[in-house]
View 1 (tube, rainbow, N blue to C red):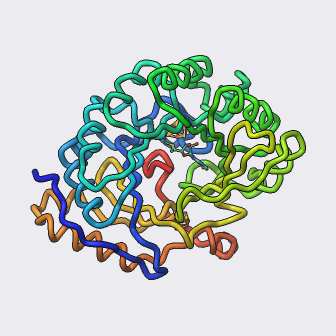
View 2: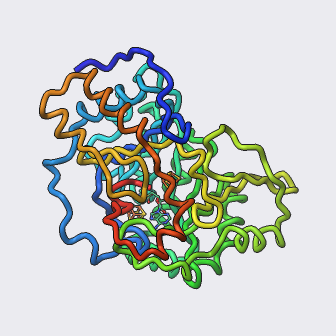
Length: 343
Ligand code: SAM
Ligand code: SF4
Ligand code: SF4
């Protein structure tokens, strides 16, 4: 397979959003059972591993995405570190000409083991999901599968291996882990971590989401601002989804990903590729295109690229902007689960 590229930029959707980011799910398996993502009852019929994209297929497709304007790839899952030989795949991905940024989101359970290999593989950036630093609450937020101490050791090992500016993703669920917001902020400030609070989203169909469980941006912001006054920071780049704030005392940075209370669809430049080879234009759509089957049908590189262009050019997705309208219509759609699409 060939991994080189020909420049054809930019690919723009119906709302003038360029195709810039690829979320690459490398497995839908996970060793945690976070109730907001992969509740125990949701995973009895998981796909068999033999329908997964191979490393070569992932590389080939990724190189096509990069040739169409994708500059950043974020590897995700399921738990991506469960994929065999992930550092090897990352190493090959990092060599795709034209790719500017390669990042990984992990639950951190295997980070201690892989930190040095990940650094050596050419991975640029790391995000670790950590919803609480209280042991009991952490256990609840991971479906009693996580090990808080192991994750903290993994973060330390990653810093020792040379990862700077590690981000922490914290999903906040009202009445479950919101009492620990300041503890998370203290933990991030003491350990040079960039904290991102994520509003709990109505992803998939199995987490029994209701708007009552969402702690909106404004509440999280005020809780922190009272203790540590915050000042707004400029976005790092145009399509950045987090709104960034700095602490007035200069010690660190914090961000909010507020898909429910402050939708950012107008800036959404992400396409998603699942581990079984389906592309999605949005987290909250049932529409997808099966690239794996297209590959198996021996579509040429040019024809695969044309398919992707066609899908992106026809993209109209803006679910978060129309969420309340959609929810009040009581229409049912079969949304992909977060552990399948990768967040
Ligand atoms: N397993 C890895 C991890 O947890 O970091 C990567 C995959 S996980 C699906 C990616 C991100 O999605 C995590 O930070 C997780 O907290 C977030 N996430 C999952 N379900 C969510 C939901 N319903 N609302 C908001 N964020 C969610
Ligand atoms: Fe697994 Fe990540 Fe989903 Fe938690 S959020 S169940 S760690 S995929
Ligand atoms: Fe992007 Fe869809 Fe989320 Fe809007 S709702 S930001 S289009 S993934």
